[in-house]
Amino acid sequence: EYSEFNYRTIQNESGYIWSLQWSSENGEVYVRINQDGEILSYSENSYTNDDGQWAKITCDEAKQMAQDFAKKVDPKLFENLVFVSQRGNGRNVGFEFAESKNGIKLYNRGASVYIDRVSKKVRSYSSDGISKKDAQSAEKVISYEDAVKALNEKIGSELVYKKKYDYKDKKIT
Image 1: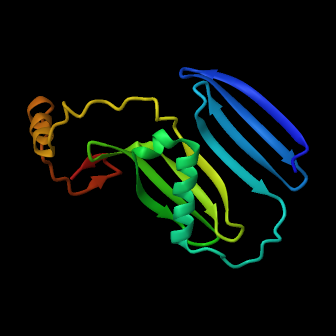
Image 2: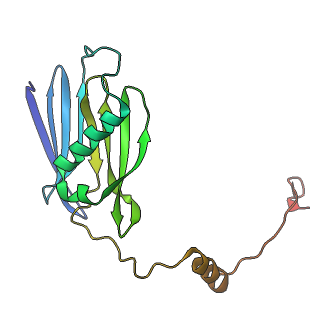
Image 3: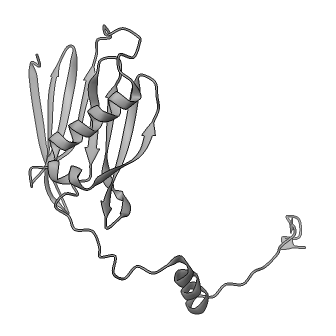
């Protein structure tokens, strides 16, 4: 179905990343893979619009598709993912997942999947390749109250009320 293939390799602080692209006159598929073989991102773009206008699956069915896709792409990653939020409810609906360690959601470590509810296809997937990374230990986490106390003791703060800034005299009155 795709007639052309292109790729490029980049190196960053994490290692090598391969960007792969398959394309044709009807669309294209992009995939990014890291040196550990983890799929970091996937997207499919179709240049044809012959699927109709009406959603053929519900948002709940799309969410299940998103979970199934994430599990298929990286089963180890999916073991620790929990649903966080849904974005949109039209043709394309996205689902955000976060890694959970010891009951704590790590919002900066997760995955997102977008589903086209008309074509019933995964349109995009992205993760930060977290399945082989270790989260920082929660042993040194302090409570909110302890954080406020430490802030006031070590840095200090002063409550000040300011009424108005006089732009002409450049002073607060």
